[in-house]
Amino acid sequence: MRWLYGGSGTPLREFLHVDDLADAVVFLLENYSDLEHANVGNGKEVSIKELAELVKDVVGLKRELEHVNVGNGKEVSIKELAELVKEVVGFKGELVWDTSKPDGTPRKLMDSSKISGLGWTPRISLRDGLVVTYKWYVENYGKQ
Image 1 (cartoon, rainbow, N blue to C red):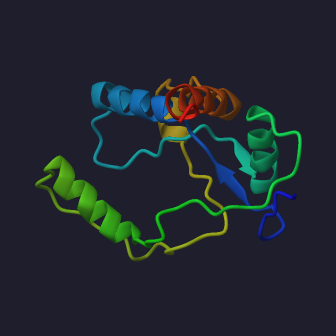
Image 2: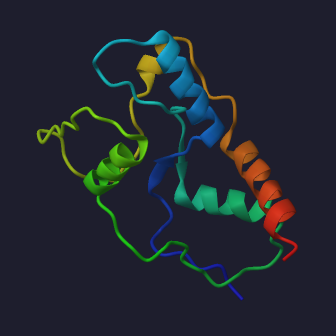
């Protein structure tokens, strides 16, 4: 068997553990009041190939597997997602779209210098996040 990936694996992405995101949101609520948005990130890029190798290592794969796409099979635009989040959380404000910015980019690393400049840094590395998440999954669903 093989673990088969589409593409070259070279596109770069930035990953942030959900606990760091939650910590950053609380940090911003307590320390930031400007109207300008502040991106949250760790400032580290990982190639899709590196991520696949890391996942393989974390889950202890000793053999290659066929690829399986994971998702719900439904597409949603960023606008639809934002509207849904607005509805779910009961946000009464206005969503504003800056159409001078492009809709897509081959790189997903954002400028998180603002929150870094305020003194916040993520606590959980990609590897540690994967280890903790996988361990939780195995403990809660792996025995079924």
